[in-house]
Length: 171
Image 1 (tube, rainbow, N blue to C red):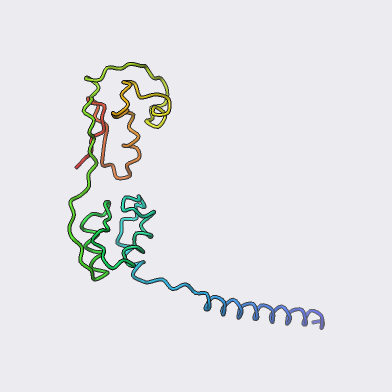
Image 2: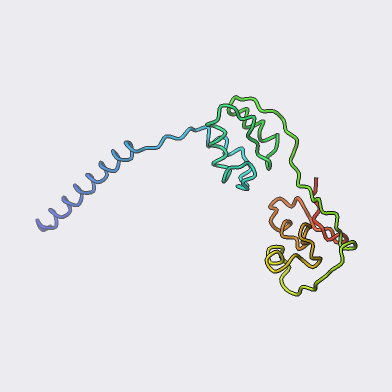
C-alpha cells in the first residue's frame, strides 16, 4: 500500500474518532432528563390526542399530570374514571370519581316541525352550510343537520337520526 493511502486512512480514522468523542461529550452535557413516570402515564392514556382534557395531546396531558401536585382538577374525558384511577395509582395520588361528560343536543327542531325555506344542492357539510347560509330551514340557532359532528367523532358515539334529522348521542 502506498504511503499516501495509508496516511489518508489514518487521518480519516483519527478524525472519525475525534468526532465520535466530541459527539459523546456533547450528548452527555446537553442530555435532557425526562421523568420516567411521564412515559408510564402516557401508556395508560387512550392516545386519542383529542384535546378534551385541555392539553394539546395525551403526551402533554401526561406531563401535566406528573408535574402537578393535585390532579383532582385534571380529567381525561375519553379514558374516564377507569384511566384516571390507573394514573392515580401510578403517581400515588388520589383522584375523585367524576360523572361522564356527555354532549347534549338542545335543538328540538326535528325535520317535521321546521319547514324548509331553501333548497340546497351541493355537498352536505355543516361547515359549507354555515358559510353560505343558515341551513335549509334558515334557523340561526339550530342544528344544520348535515352530520359533520358525527363524522368528526372518533369514537362512534353519535349518529344521525333519520326521522328527526338531528344527531343522537349514544350514552
